[in-house]
Image (cartoon, rainbow, N blue to C red; front, side):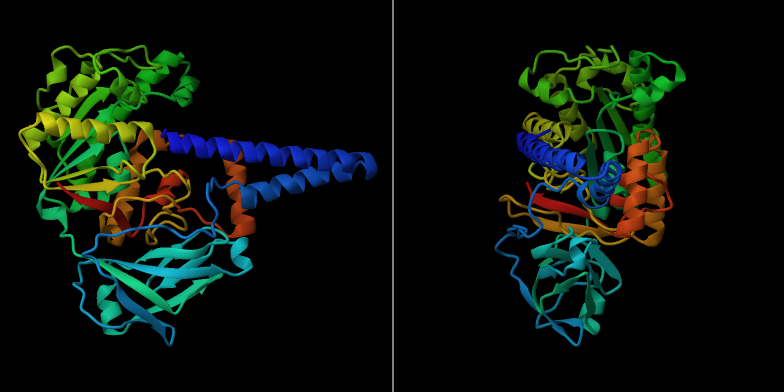
Amino acid sequence: MSVRKQQLLRQHRRNKRITLLLIFLGLLVLGLLGPLWLLPLTLLVLWIAHEAWFADHLFYSPQDDYQYRFPEVVEPMGLRIVNGRWQLAAGSIAPSATVIAKVQIKSNWLGRWFDPSVQVGTDQQTFERGAQGVRYLNLTGQVEALIAEGLSVQGRFCSVAADAELYVFNQPSPVNENIMILAPHADDAELAAFGLYSSADNVSIVTLTQGEIEAGYYQRLGLSKEQAAQLKGRLRTWDSMAIPLWGGVPQASCVQLGYYCMQLPEMAKQADTPFASKESGESDIRRARQHNSLQLPGDSTGQPTWHNLVADLAGCLMHFKPDVVVMPHPEIDPHADHIATTQAFFQAMEQSDWRPKRLFLYANHLHDNDRWPMGDANTGVALPPAMVDLPADELFSYVLSEQQQLDKAMALLMQHDLQPPMPLKRRLRRSIQQLLTGRRWPKTGENEFLRKAVRKHELFWVREL
């Protein structure tokens, strides 16, 4: 986890402790002065209210503007609402372009209790409760309708300002190029880019870790902690090699490097020191590599060191020779293994004779908001909250058909890490939110990633190399 994410969590927990202390003092006064039966009833009401409206991890004010910069060559075009439809002031747009509308929205009083959203054309994109200020809607896939007759715009629990700015990104689709996807864990490639890679002609997927930790679910089988971690590592290793075939990527184009989950940051600090698994007791990465189709530098010793990881990635670059590398966004995605993956890649490029042309960066996790993309499955993906200055990247948004969205959901259901049932507390919270706030989850499965990742869009930040 990044330093900024840790600071945000500490601040959130501190504020929560202060709130709980104030509630406790209030309840103490109530217990002393009021009838006895009122105390448990008040506790129940407060708990239900917390689960319904205050359980989201939102580490910023929803009234803050999102702060995005784009390259100077991307000049905004004017949009205006006329008779309930967005009309383009002037200019032409290629139908395949990635199109983002910078808008001002303002939640009404209901938007503080229900998730505010904007219905734009055939899509709906959702924001934080109480959202107010600058937000960015993704209009990709609706360009032809926008040019022909305009796009209908209607706020639900919010209003949308009449004037907006339209940013058009003409990054070409990489589906006809040679793509390499770097996945810190099994499922990262599917979460971020299943639609993209299942449409591409030439794809390789390199998974860095076994993902063996937090295996308590498998201890119910009578296994020790070490045995459960070993089983989970084997299952997720298999996932990384087998599930891409559902998207048309053969096993020969998949590589499992076999390093250990949540050890990459420590490896980066001590490049020559082997870092064994925190839970499985294993220290030889070669066991996870038995199905790889190519030999890599780390195969010689099997030691989980940073030097071996960087050399392995350099070997993958030289073997697959990708034009485009898809990997975690180093500034937006705070997961420690994801950050270390990008560090290792840039060091690997220095050792490699091959240099890709473009990076497509994804974010499967966020610093500021654990619910993004907000709203229902199978809807669009607005830009995530950006509360600090970010590089001025171009954007590429891949549009998934309904069939691709269904296939992506099935690919995620195959992932063993997304299969365990929700704990009781989360089930109760979800039921309360469905009843009181109207939130909905997909029928495909109960894991939160089936809501967040199965969408009309897959979103990437693009950097030229």
